[in-house]
Amino acid sequence: MGWLRRHRVLLPGVSVLARQVSEVRKVAEKRLHATVAGAARRADPALPGELVATLKTPEGARFSELERLRRPPTRTTGTAFARALERVDEVGAYRLGRLRLSQIPPNRMAALARYALGSKAPLLERAAEPKRTAMLTAVMRHLEAKAIDEALNLFQVLMATRLLNTARRKTEKERLSTLPQLEKASRVLARAAKVLFGELSSTHTTYASRSTDPCGRSGLAYTALRRFWRATMPAVETGHYGAVEDLARNRVNLNQVITHWPDMLKVVGSLVTNQVRAYDLLRMFGREGRPPPLGAAFAEYGRIAKTEHLLRVVDPVDDTYRRQMNRQLTVQESRHKLARDVCHGRRGTIHQPYRDGMEGRLGALGLVLNAIVLWTTRYIDAAVAQLRAEGHEIRDEDVARLSPLKHKNLNVLGRYSFTASVPAAGALRPLRDPDAPELDEDESVGSE
Image 1 (cartoon, rainbow, N blue to C red):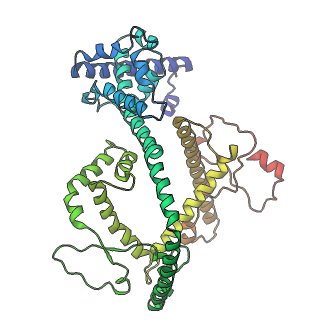
Image 2: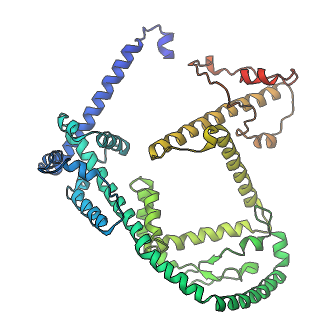
């Protein structure tokens, strides 16, 4: 735009620009539809016809096959779970995972699936090719993952309500019957723990007095409920760990890490290339507290980093790491305070019952926070530059402690006015004169 104005080129009107943008979007949509439909035909020439057949309403039925496949299970019964599994098989029979759609961004496929899911079967049937095949392909790919997730969720609910609750009630009855013996054993354990912690406190008095955690507690108190792990390589001798020798009683199973190392690298590569979501991995590795062998290997590997973190926290000589933790916690708390003040409507709570609405509000909040931080950073830099130009001594260590998350000068109440004005050549508004008289509350509210 700047080049066009400087060279006096006639700019198109708003309506012309809008029409050109609309034409470009139509071309992009047609290319997307052609690419998806072409991939479906290359995978199986009969696949488009099979997808279109799901739009027909079978004889004696009230809705089409596509509408039936789109409906999730609504009851928590064994029959409903069996139907959910049948739905997974029916959707998976189209084998849409064989389609090569890696060149299409996932968000474009998700948007196409959302549009098709919100359309009725007659409207999809009247759509022209290749748009109809593309929308049906996107819907079926979406339903493959959705049907599996809904079947797993139903299975989890059934296990919790029909099996685990019964076992839990039976266990509770047995526990109540053993309370007298449990009370006696608890008294013995309390006396033994008192003696044990007394011995530990007397042994590590000097070490604990010099080591503190970010909250100011002693290092021994900080690590009392945490486990230290030692990693011993095969055929490699290790030395003495000094004051923490008695803490590192647990050993990392390096053989398990070495065995699953190739698979661990594949998982990391899948995360980096966005082939799999971290949420899906955590869900698979968690599995009700019983992780698979690969998940256990990741846990063993993570214990090494966890032990390094704890050792740096309780280091009695160098407290740099603890100071960094304190600084990071302060930054996070300041950001949360700013977010709470900005998101003040409805007491800062998000009431959208659907995920897209919540993600939209959170994304808008993040955009506003970034704009505030950018605005404050530029004006802080301008203020520091002006003070130095006036001859004031500004130390670099003081500048390093300035935070763009301070927002006492911002007013989030009142009416908002948005104008499409851009300061010339990146100029900023004049800075406030600290010697000028303070504005009244009403005047300051209106000026912000």
